[in-house]
Amino acid sequence: MASPEIAVSIDQVVKRYGGFTALHGVSIDIREREFFTLLGPSGCGKTTLLRAIAGFEDVNEGRLLLKGVDITNLPPHKRPVNTVFQQYALFPHMTVFENVMFGLLRKNWIQSEAQRRVQDVLEMVQLSDFASRKPAQLSGGQQQRVALARALAPRPQVLLLDEPLSALDLKLRQAVRSELKALQRETGIAFIFVTHDQEEALTMSDRVCVMSNGRVQQIGSPKDVYEAPVNRFVADFVGETNLLEVTVNKIKDGLASVALPGGNAFECPAAAVVDPGVGHLSVRPERIKVTADGQGDLDAVVTGHTYLGTDIQLLVRLADDEVMSVRLQNSQTTEIPEQGAAVGLVLEAGAARLLAD
Amino acid sequence: MAAKIDLRRFPGFLGITLICLVVLYAPLIIVAVYSFNDSTSITNWGGATLNWYVDVFTGPESPKFQQAALNSLIIAVCAAGAATCIATAAAVAMTRAGRFRGKTLSFALINLPLMVPEVVTAVASLVFFSAIGFTNGLFTILIAHTVFCIPFAYLPISARMQSISDVYEQAAMDLYATPREAFTKVLLPLMMPGILSGSLLAFIISLDDFLITNFVKGAGVETLPTAIFGAVKQGIKPNIMAISTLMLGVSIVFVTLSWLVGRVGQNKQK
Image (cartoon, chains in turn red, brown):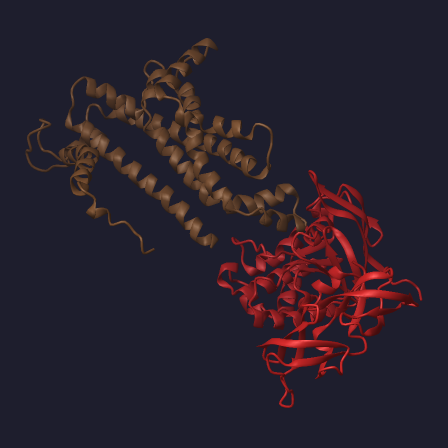
C-alpha cells in the first residue's frame, strides 16, 4: 500500500524552557483528512506541540513540515493553519460577522467573495442569524461555533483545536463532538485536536497520540490504544484499568505465560518490549466476569459497590490485598454479590495484557 | 461576606468623618457659593448674582484670563496627547515583552514623577532648560507637562492592558494578521477605554498644574493657574472665585468621564 499523504510532519522536535524540556524529540506524521488527537495529562507537552505547529512557540531542534513545506521558521501569520483556541479568543469589539471575516481580509480576499464565504461558514455552524451580534451576547456553545467558523473560513490546510470543548457543559460537549466530527469530514482537512479527556479522544479520533512528559507514548486508532496499550502509562490513562503485578514465566510470539496472584497460570498477549520476570498485567474492569468462589482465574472478596447508572462498579480484594475494580452492566438479570462474599473472577479472552513498566 | 465590619460602630466614626469632609470640601463649597455673591466683599453675602461669571468673559481682566485659558488648553491637549502615546507604548512593552533586563527599573522610572517632590522637578526642569539654552515659554511648559503626565496616563492604560489576554493577538496572527495589524486592529481597540481614561486624566493634571508651570514659564506667558495666582496676589476678587468654580466644574467633568470610560470598557470585557 502506498503511504497515505502526510498533512503535517513533526520531525524530532525538541522544545526547552530554560532547564525544563517540554518536548523530547517528538516525531509524528499526521495524515491528510484525518482527525488526529493529541491526548495526555496537563503538562505532557500536547499544547506546546500544537502551539509549535501554529507558530506561537519556537522549537529548539527538529523540523515542522506542512504538506512537505518546511514551516519551522515561519511566523504564525505566514502559516496556512488556523487555530480554535481553548477560550475561543473571539475579538470582543467585533461582531460575529467581522470576526469570521477577519482572516479573509488579512489574506486579501475580494470583498464579495469574502462575504459569501463568511455566510457559508456561518451557515455551516448554524449561526447565520447571529452574524450581527457581539461575542458577549452569545452562549458558550455559540461562541465555540463562531471560533470554529472563524478558523475554517480562510480554508486552512490543517485545523488546530486546543481543548475547544473544555469550557462547555457535559450535555453540550457530547453534542458538539459529533458536530465536530461531521465538520471534519465535510471540510476534508486534517484536524489536530488537543485534549486531556480520553473519552473525547476515543469517540472522535481516527488516530490518537498518547503523550506524557514530553514524549510520544503510543500512536494508534482508538481501539489500538484502548485494547492494546504499549505500556502502563497508556493503559492507565486511556480508560479505567486494573494493574496487577504478576510473575512472567515465558514470552513467545507475543504471548506471555504468567502466574497470577494466587498462583493460577494464565496466558495473554504481551506488549512488544516485555522481558520475563516481574511484569504488570492490565485488566479492563468491564472484561471481568464474576463467578463462584474457586471457579475463576482469581479469588477475591467483595469489599463494596458503587452505583454508576449504566454500570455497577464492584470493588474486590485479592488474596495479596490488592484491590481491583470490576464493572457489571446494570441489567435486570445482573446478580450483585453481597459485600464480604467470596467470589471467583474470570478474565475474558482479550481482557488482560502484559505491559512494559 | 458575613464578616463585614460595621464602620459606624467604630468609636469616633462620625466625628472623624465630619472633620475630614469639612476640611476637604468646605473651602470648595464656600468658593463656589461666593462666586454667586452680589458684593465686592468676599465675606459678606449680598444676594445672588451671575455678574462675576459675566465679568470673567467680558470684564476688564477677561482678555488676560482668556489668553491664559487658551494657553492652558493648548498645553493640556498637547501634553496629554504626547504623554498618552508614550504611556501606551510603555504599557505595551511592560506587559507584552515578558521579562527583560531592567524591567523593574523601567517601571520605577515611568512612575518616578509621582514620587519626586514637585518642587524638585520644577527646580530641576528650570535648571535643565537654562543649561541647554532653551528660552522659557509655551514649549518648555509643554515638555515639562508631558513628563509629569506620563505616569498619570500610564496607570489606567497599564491596568487595562493587564486585563487583555495575549491570546487575542495570537488569534489575530493566527488569522494572517501581521504583528502590526494585530496591534492596530485588535490590541489597540481593546486598549482604547484605558487610553481614553489615561488621556483624560493626563489632560486634567496638566490643566491645573501650578508649581512646575510657574518655574518653567517664560516672562509674560501665563496659564490659567498662574494667572489666577497672579491675580490673587493683588487681592482676592469674586471673579477669581468664578474662574475657580469653572475650573472645578471642568475638572469634575473630566475625572468623572475618565472613570466612566474606564468602567464601561471593563464591563464590556466580561
